[in-house]
Structures are given as structure tokens and as C-alpha cells.
Length: 265
Length: 311
Image 1 (tube, each protein chain N blue to C red):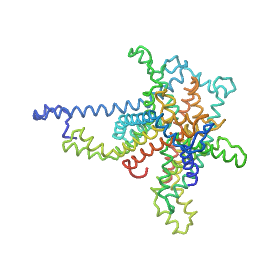
Image 2: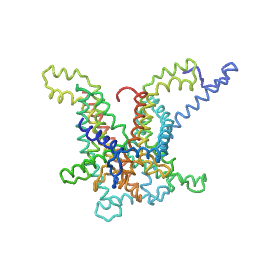
Image 3: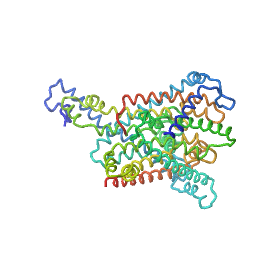
Image 4: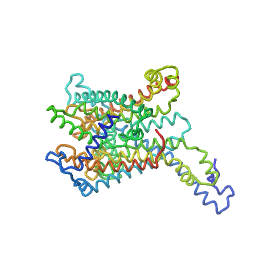
């Protein structure tokens, strides 16, 4: 326990304290107490915070739209071996280093990448399109990075689903649309909430993806925090921004605790 | 299997005129659902795998391009490996190798510490009777949900303050390095290990331990002869998870590393940030292969562990 308190809670406490202090000559926190950094966080970086929330929400929505049918498809395979192989195909990229995966995606969407090459070759565009270093690239990178997080919990929920409920709904006259929204969706909702939180929370705190794939228009909270801590940064300001980030994450966790999957993993 | 949406055209079945439209719509929905049901997963898998496949494929490209194929070549791999054989190379293979060694060293040490502490925490929270147990239970999940970047900067601030205090007190100057990286990795890995071990602990029958005690075993014997062998697959799974997370971590290491303690992810980040040498495709491919081997190995180990626990 002491370890958790010493190297986990205490550092967080220090950041919390530092966020209320004044910036010293070398960027370090000094007395007196002030609320300036929180004010600056919201005044100057408000747009970045909103953008981060937007990116994370969009990433979650896209992951859900792609991940839900994928999880359904895998869970509805008859043979367990096929299910296992498909799950593996979803999970294996996940075991590959995040930087390497991000780089792999960059090679595809960059100006000299394969996607542009084929777009030009097929005559769909005249000149290569600038895709990297745009907000779109950041969201694409986040979806790429966190999609497995969405598929797994939904897969678990769909697999537990009793197929007879769906048949019963059909027998009682519900068409597929109705049967999905009235039976399948509510029964798999805990998995959806769990998956959404598992995507949304890391997406909010993302640093690598916007750093490597975003231009100035794709900056997120993580980049703000990082820039205040490198070299002669502004530690109190960086602390205040990370405190705001922490509060956002905790709201997400509370949502999950209230509506998410019950029970231990 | 269903009555609501037959797979045949409803017009042929003598369905009353006014219901045919509704049934045709249901039929169209079902067909659309079927198509989307396999098309979306296909797109998802292609999306996940295409970039990796392209990266691996073009690591054998003769040209330094990732879009135009100029013939098969192993030259980038040769560049990576040539300085091993003593040949001159413009690629910083020695740096790469050192970063791999650093990564393995950090992951190994932090895994051993995190697994020991995590298992102890799991046992303490599950078995212990002390005030605030619920609170500690919730504490486990904190490092898992807190963003890497917050954890990274909080540890950076923490170490800075501790080092300054230490210098004022003893006059000794401490710097970031392996020590700080390992402490940071243990800090986040302890929680993951504890969660995995707790899951295993939850499935364990407590009467086994009671039986051991009834038969005269003391606490120490009961733990090592009964509890630990049953927990072992969980401990092993937790250790493997910790090792992987530690090898993979970039953000927290980024904020706690010092001079000369570049780990593999930091090295790759440096390459990506500066000039992106063509050898990076070969290095990435080697890393992908290594991680697949690691996954396969861990599965074999886990399966063996699970089988042992059943007998």
C-alpha cells in the first residue's frame, strides 16, 4: 500500500498543489498561492479542451460504429476456433508497440504514402492530398489505436446474450430493426458503455497520436501538458491543465461506475 | 427461423396487399443488416492490418519509399545488422541495441517488483480485515484509469521535488535514470498485477485454505503449499501483462527518463521526430515479429499454467 501512496497519490497531490502556485524563474512552482493558471487554462486553452472532448467523442462514436458489428460478427461464428482466430486478429495489433502502429498508419496517409499514390493513380485527385497533420488524421489515429478496446467488452456482452430472446422477439412480430433496438442493444449496453469508456478515457489523455499525426490544428490537452513540462516550461500551468484533464477523466469513470458493467473483471 | 421477415418475396405467399410493403421493408432491412454484418468487420480488420502489412512489405523495398515498389531487397536489414558484424553503418545500431537492452532491463526489474507487490496487495485487500479496505480496493483502479500523461508529469514533478529536498538535506545530487523509470513502471504495473491476481483469487475456494489449517498447517505452509500454487497462473498472467506494458510504455518513461537511459520506445520516438530513416521500417518489422513471438510464448505458458492448476 505504501508504494501506491508514495509513488502514486503523493505525486498527484504535488501536481495538485503546484497548480495553485506561481511560476518561478526556471518554470518551477513557488509561493504565493494563485488561481491564475486555472483561469489561463480555461481562457487561453478552452478551445483545445473542447477540441479534445470533440476528438474523443468522435473517436468513441466511430469505434462503436465499427466495433459493434465486428464484435457481433465474431461472437456469432459457430466454431470456437474461428472466434478465437478472429479475436486474435483484432487483438494482435494491440500487442504491437503503439509508436510502431502509429508510424505504420502514418506511412499510409502521409503525402507520399500509399493512399495518395493510389488516389492519384486512379485519377480521383489531381495532386496528393494533405491528410497527415490534420484533425482528421488525429481522429483516424485514435480510432486505429483504441478500436480493440471497444471490440472486446462488446464481444463479451454479445457472447453472453441468449439468442432465444432474439428469436422470441421475431416470433412475436418484431422485425430485425425492432428486435435489435428493443432486445439486443439493451442487453449489450453494459458492454457498449464499458467499451466506450475504455476508448474515451485514453483518447482524452492522448499524447503520442496528436504529437505525431496532428498539426497545430490537431493539438490536444496532452500536448499542452507536455509542452509546459519540457525545458523551461511552466510547471504550475502544466499542473493546472493536467488537473483539468484528471477531472474530465473522473467524470468519465463515474459515468462508467454508474452505468457500466457490474462486477469484477 | 422467424415469421416477421421471411426471406422470400412476400408477394408470392398470398400476403394481403396492405402488409406487403411492410414485409418488403423488413426483408430489405434484413438483407442490409446481413451485408453490413460482414462488410463492416471486414473493413475493420483491413483497417487494423493493412498499415502493418504495408509497413512489413515495404521494409523489403529496395527504395527508401513506402509507396512505390522498386524490387525486393534486404539492404535496410543489412544496415541495421551490419554494425553488429563490425562493419560501418550510417544507422545507429549500437544505440538501438542499447535501447533494447535498457528496455529489457527496466521491464525485467519492474516486473519482478510489481508482481511481488501486486500479489501482496491483492491478498491483503481480499483477505485482510482492516479499516478502509473498500478505499484501497478503489485505489487499485486509479492507476489504470488515469491518463499516462498525468501520471508521467506527476512523477516528474514528484522526482524533481524529492531530488531538490535530498540535495538540500544531504548535499548529494540525484538525477533521473533507471531508478526513476523503474519506480514509475512499478507504480502503474502494481495495479494491473493486483487486478489480474484478484480475479484469480475470486475464483478460489476459501475452504481449501481452511482445510489446510484444520490439518495442522500454519499460515506460512498454507500459503506456499495451497494458496500460491492455485494463484500461480494469475500471478504469471499478471507478470506477463506487466512485462508487456513496461516494454510498450512510452509516455511515462518519456517524463521519468534521464540521460543515457533511452528505452526502445523512446528510441523509436526519437527516430520518428527527427528525420525518419528508411531503416525504421526494418526496425518496426523486427519489433512486430518480436511482439508476436512474445504473445505466442505467453499463451503457451498460460495454457500450461492453467493445465497445471487443474490437475
